[in-house]
Length: 244
Image 1 (tube, helix red, strand yellow):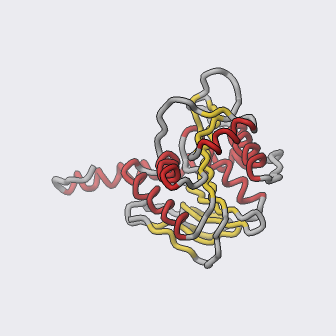
Image 2 (cartoon, rainbow, N blue to C red; image 1 turned 45 degrees about the vertical axis):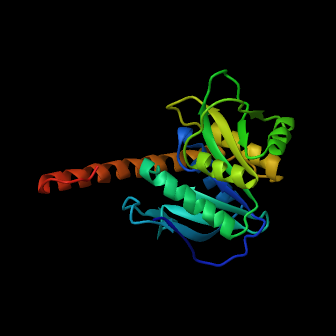
């Protein structure tokens, strides 16, 4: 079970959720970390589960949960920032918890950010959306709708639920070169949000900060993998187990 714990109660009705869990190119975490910093977003909650890896994050000398919720009241934005890759078995319960949070709080829109393998050498941002009207509007704004394909992960499950409920939901997919992490990917995602949400986030300092986020997340992923393997080895050494 995954719970979203809110430390400071806020009225989020009509707000927009921006999510981008670690995935291809680390587009989401790099972009969201930068947005949180530049908009001075307030730390208001976190996600917890006994199934999460035993990790904490140190931020400004303070221990913090590795998946956190931030809010900006001026722009009516909620973000979820995650510093470790979600194990496959937790994707369904996590997406269910996030979508319940959206519905329970009257959040009006969802924007997801991620990567898509680069095929044609162009830097155009691809989109998927929950309603035909949104697709048409995005196309007019210069984005390229995906006409055929398969989507996976948390953003895909959120999009499925949003489509059924006709809740505005947009997945922004930045073309990336696989196995290469580049701040330019996050820059494209943020500029897309600037256009769609009428923000004015300056991306000139993005490269420096994105490199720091990349290094931190890569280290957390490494520690998560090591702790997972060490735990499995400890169980194996102590006798038969069903753990996998």
